[in-house]
Image (cartoon, rainbow, N blue to C red; front, side):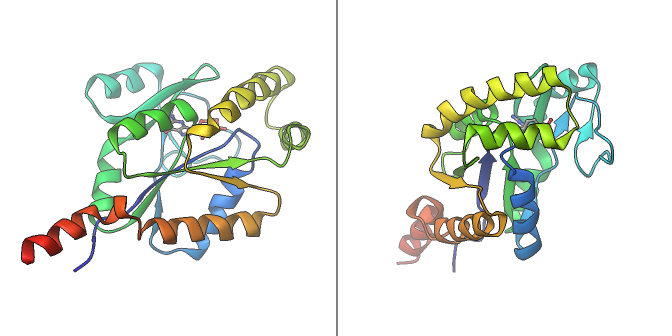
Length: 204
Ligand code: 5GP
């Protein structure tokens, strides 16, 4: 007997913190980890595939999904909607998979209300200067978008106090090691094991 339900992992960090790269490395190492595919109204970047990187929806489609209670959480970020479609998350967790939501802070706080046994991890850039360099080097956003994202980064970092863990992404493989460790340890937390404790006691 053990808690057969997967762990919900909420991962945030400013755009340019490199959380996507760390996540990729983590997913390559951990077979039991499933990344939830979000929906967004922003346009696809070059190379992004519908259904793999995001579900790209129109504003009307997204708002329909909100009305039909199809989103576990959603937020407006830099002028676009982003949200986590409900069904797959529950399905995967019930199948014992640990599910990662890579989402911004407003959405993370909604999950905190709904799923208090989730673990909340914030990926931090080594410095603001480094963040600015990473955003400019990416060359996928124009100057105005970069400025918007730098401002959003400050607001997001202010919210990082509300997370359970802070992981500094200086060296990607080390950040992935730390994330892996946190997930492993969190699976033994009392919060996650509550159902198991109840089951043991029921059998007594
Ligand atoms: P990007 O446009 O760079 O792909 O994502 C912008 C921000 O939206 C990132 O901080 C990313 O974590 C966040 N994001 C992606 N998917 C979701 C989601 O489903 N819900 C919320 N609340 N934020 C998301």
